[in-house]
Image (cartoon, rainbow, N blue to C red; front, side, top):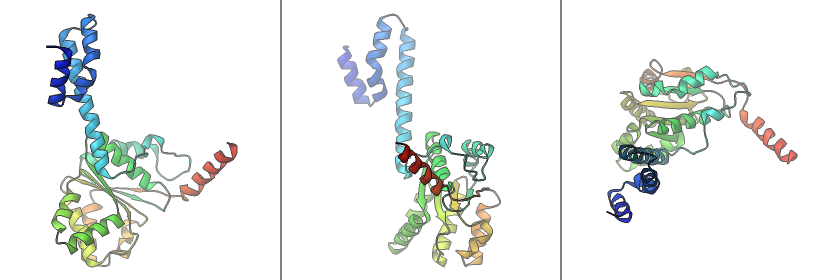
Amino acid sequence: MTLSQVRNRLSELGFTGMLMNCEAVLTKLQSGEIHALEALDELLEREWRYRQERATVTRVRRSKIRKGASLEEFDFSFGRGITKAELRNLASLEWCDQGKPLILIGPTGIGKTYIARSLGLLACEKGKTSLFMTVTDFLEHQAIARNTNTYLKFRERLTRPDLLIIDDFGMRKFTAQEAEDLRDVIEHRSYGKSTLITTQLPVDHWGEVIGDEIILDGLVDRIEPPGLSIKFKGPSFRPKLKKTVDDLGQKN
């Protein structure tokens, strides 16, 4: 069999990682640098890595998370009330492995969304599925689902990911139906799936946006006792970031 035939067969089988590296591995084999089993092992390793990378790319795309967030680049110099130890604990994703909820609480511009996005991307890299949506996204899709009698499909879509991120909870009041549907989604996720919520409202103030006490109690009961809660403090990071950018612009 010629090299061209090998390449064609690898292409037909969809072994792209092997296809991309077969010539280099064959050269090493022919030069005596590696033995036959080592060549096979290297080709299999290349194929495995390629598939892992492609799977990660697919998970990130489906997560709807904007790229560019990384916990390694989180700036602690602005004193936002979260310690490096707490951040390392979150980055371990142990809470996600255990299906526990996570609530990030603090004022606007403090870095909650950045950390949420970073954790979502990290989960994708670790082989987990994530889905990011603002509370506005949730309510818009919930309304469409109710109006088109597709609520069960909507709930299934939100129940499926290993990690669901709901950003900016508390931006407006919920109707009774909206609140009940949120509670329903959270309840279905409480059986081994993690939900991450960012909000300016401490949990004991959620009654300001969810008026029905029974629904509120059901929601909080699924989130607070088993979940983790991180409270941020301090002024918004955004004005300081703008000043830093302006200063750099003046220097340049």
